[in-house]
Image (cartoon, rainbow over all chains, first blue to last red; front, side, top):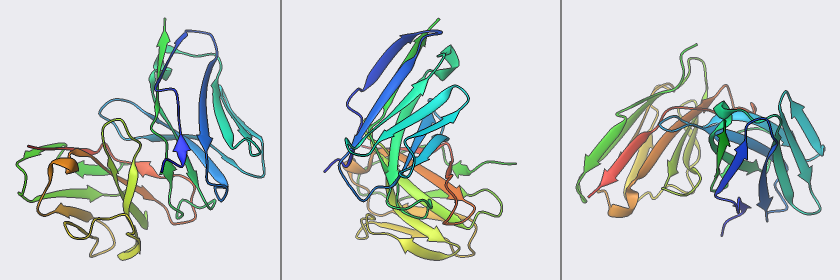
Length: 114
Length: 114
């Protein structure tokens, strides 16, 4: 049972344009969501997070939107840069602390074309 | 600050053999996690330690997998005996404590079981 789903395995975007990565979840107990970025041969690195009490969180070029009623979140990258090319994982937990288990999606591979 | 260290980076073994992975978390981090990432999937938590105590090992296949963190710092994960389906990347992560949002990941150990 995949509780966190990233239905697009890959995405290709032109440099300077917006990248939108989507994530859906089924567990209504999830109340904290994170995005991780992973380069080849490296571990995932934390990118941005959002609590269920918010519907938007912004950090520089990265913005995460949360639609609780639709159980959907998205990561927007504006403008996209070639260095953003990586695999992006959506993750969710049932508590704000990372002590609560993180459930990861299967990832979306983003390619930003120069 | 030094990141999470893992060794070896790669390991190839035959089924029914044993293998061990080592992780050194970021200095001062009390919480340590082991994840299994099978090709095409997101990381799945195997076990979580708080200092040298186990917080969550509900997804650890205890008939063949074991992990320890004897002095609350380094940790080892062992598989004995290995099966073909254990082929995966094994990621170690650490966080300052259970109530920090950010888990810092090591580069992982890629295991191939033949």
